[in-house]
Length: 414
Image 1 (tube, one colour):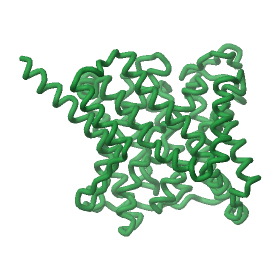
Image 2 (tube, one colour):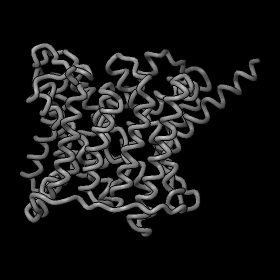
Image 3 (cartoon, helix red, strand yellow):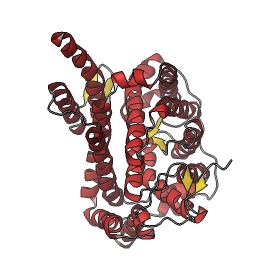
Image 4 (cartoon, helix red, strand yellow):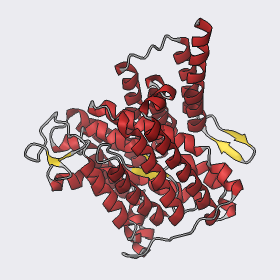
């Protein structure tokens, strides 16, 4: 049996949505894979660059993790697993401890996520829904998009001209374009912005010229240290929430109930993170940038993600290609992500609307509102040696407080 059925004659017409287990012609599928690669590249390269971990190894385990995710979710959930921003704060704080200690924390977090995924799969989705009903998952999806908005607006303001051109191309092609221009709006926007960056002298190619065409990624072994492990473990709640939010968001986009794949998704992300910790990369997570691409193009085919995963693995063995990806101007990334992060936030609102979440209910409104402000404002607090950011606090507020207050309200009424 084929992994993917061919959609129509392999060439989608205007308005067609390509389902996860469908594909178009292979040349077009490769093009869609390239679009996802461009969307994820900036973030996946920035995380290791910030934490001191090797970029090439991060790309390798990002690609391997994506392919593993597609296998374990049985081609039902389209996703790219890129380096998680939630790991930046704890891994940066542990940087003086060395790479081995950092990777030990990543490995421990990955194994704990796997355990949670197995529990969700064994106990059933109803158990998870009792803790994370639509009001909670919708809030987490909105949080994921808006918490990252500072990164998009900061990059946009840094280089406003290429940012505006990139965003303009994406919007024009996505709203007014037909056929290829509609489906490849994000890729076209980034390529035009990138070319403009070359013309404006914003792209430094010195590192590209000096890099080898072929080279092995830099592998490292983990070392478990309790102090570093405790720093990293709070990230687990973010990874679980992001996975649940991702599956719910894809379900909303495709019109399918994918709740049965939530456990598999969490397990796959945990295994991907653990593998990265064993070999030398930061933890991975589902990427909102790529959800945004699906929202723009209506192409949900997992075949495109398989292409992206294979491409990431191949790029990991080419220092020159890695250096080239790193030359995408910050403004181009900002222009693209301004659109994509906005889309993922609106998917969260769509989850609320489709499940008729009552935002006039005090429990929904007060807890959800506090969580959104904590996440969007990027509330950052230090607990001893741990520094927890807005995505952590926002997720904790809505995931923990909502079911607690809901039960207290039920007891009061009773």
